[in-house]
Structure formats: C-alpha cells, structure tokens
Length: 379
Picture 1 (cartoon, rainbow, N blue to C red):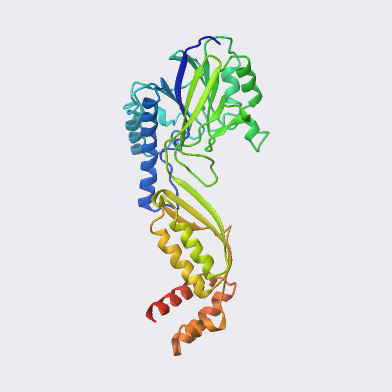
Picture 2: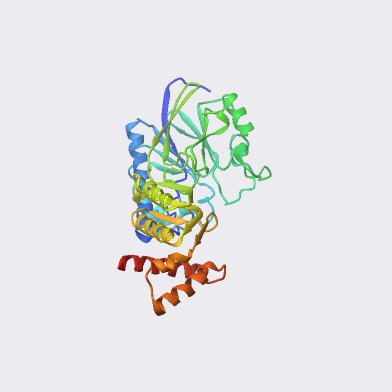
C-alpha cells in the first residue's frame, strides 16, 4: 500500500429512506420520515465541516426498491446538498436487480453528477484512494460479497472496501452463505491490500472484532429498540497505514423499551415522572412492559398517565407479549364510586367479566376503567 498523504472521508449506511412504522400516527410518521431526509443533509454538512474528500454510503439507503416515487425524489434532492463525490453501494434492501430503485427514472433523471452507484467490484479512484465495492445484485446473493471483491487484489494504492452484510463473528447463523468472513478481511488488512473496510447492514455502531479498521456506522436515524449508538456517521482519516475513526451525531430519534413493575399508586406516579423527564418527546418512541398488580383505582390512574404521555410522545405503546399486569377489584372499590340502582348492578356485572379470563375481559376492564374515571370526575 503506497502513499503517506492524509485522506478524509465520511462512512455512512442504512438510511432506510421510505421506512414506515405501523405504531406511529400519521403526524409522527411524517416527522420520522422528514428526520431521515434531515439526517442526509446533516451528513452533507458534516462532510463539508470535516473537509471530507468523498462520502461512502454502504447499502440500504432505501428501505426497499419499491418506495414511493416521492421518497426517491426527496432523496435525490437531499443528495444535491453534497459538494463532494458520493459513492452508493446497493445493499440487501435496495439491491441492484431489475427492479432496482437506482435504475428508476425517478433516480436516474435527477441524480446529481457527483453521485455514483457502485455496480461492480471494478476499482474506483478518488482522492488518492481506490474504492473496491461489493454491491448486492439480489436480495440473497448466496455468497460472501466481500470475498469476491477482494480475491484478486494485489499490492497497490491505499484501498477501502465497501461491503454490506453481516460479518460472521456477529452472525447467529454460521451456515448463511451470505455472511462476510472476518478472517478474509483481516488477512487483506494485515497484508496491506486494504486500509479500511466500510460496512453496512448492522444498525448499531460497531467496531468489528476490536479492529477499528472494520466498522459499521449504524443507521443515522434509529429504526428499532435495542440498537446501540444509532444516529451517527463516521469521519475516517487514513494516513499511510494509520486509520483514525471518529463518530459524529447526525440523527436524534430515540427508541426506549422499559420493563416497569407496578404494585402501588406510588409506582404509577414514578412512571409518570420518568415519562415526564424524557427530554425530546416528539422524537422518542417508547414501549413499556408492565408487570405487577394494581387495584382498579390505581389502574385508572395508570391509564390517565399513559393517555397524557401518548399525546406528546412520538409513540407510547404497552407490549402485550412482554406485559403481565394484573388488575384486581376489591369489594370496596365499587362501593366507593357511590353508584346506586341499575348503575351499581351494571358495574358489578362488568367487574365480574373483568375478573374472569374470558374473551370479554379486556373490554370489561376498559369499561370499568372508564366508569371509574367518570365517577371520580363527577364526584
């Protein structure tokens, strides 16, 4: 590998433009979609501020090859914000097949001249660096895409490999033919055939195998619970054989999943306080696993808390699968409502259905919660 001049570039991947989330309201979905476009423009600003010579985007820029034409048009418009070359590698969500979004007129007719889709392993030279790509041509290539791209490399210029997929040391499926072999990457790096491996596919920012020369930047806008350090792009600097990588924040959405035990009204109020303390509610998606046991009055307060926060958070849901919250009805609960006659008799009947594990249990509990809240408000 030759050359001692420093090269700086941006490494990003997994924009997933056009992604939808069924649990988001139309308003929240619109903001979520806009945030993904905003992140693209923020990456362009980062490239300018860091003096990057080019940008590599390693797969899954689009959530699928069948996103709406408007999504493609807005993406191309955002790509126009880049003042340096941008190299796009098709991934498993947007492979370069016959239906590829990159072959559509919506993309090709408006694509800026500084944007190039990597369609083969043919090296591309930019800023003293040779880029070697491993594009996906199908959703399931059936082989290690990176291995085929580097198998014939010889000693030469400073090279960066652009690849997309799961590295075998991170894959739960050791028999998947499409995983990328870490051993092959490390051998190419140690032999000086590659200086850096720019990966895409994993939504968590990841340094693979403790080697900072093999990196996933993660998705620039969080897509699900459990992702580690999403919302970033990487600034990579290569000088000779030395590689420096620095993460920069480009996106702000957050997914939060919490397991909460509720046994008393104090626990419900503590949950209210924790939700209130969330700093950026319009861009925060929360899923709760609720466990424990509450009386009907405490449960009514819980529903009021959830309703209030659902109005301001991007999304707040209670997981059915992860929750095990028992609502019990004590003898004095209905008496304390002050109901008489037919109303009291109806409440007793609904309470019996709510206590039973029959098909009407959930509807009965909802009715009882509403009754409890109405009676309390009227008192």
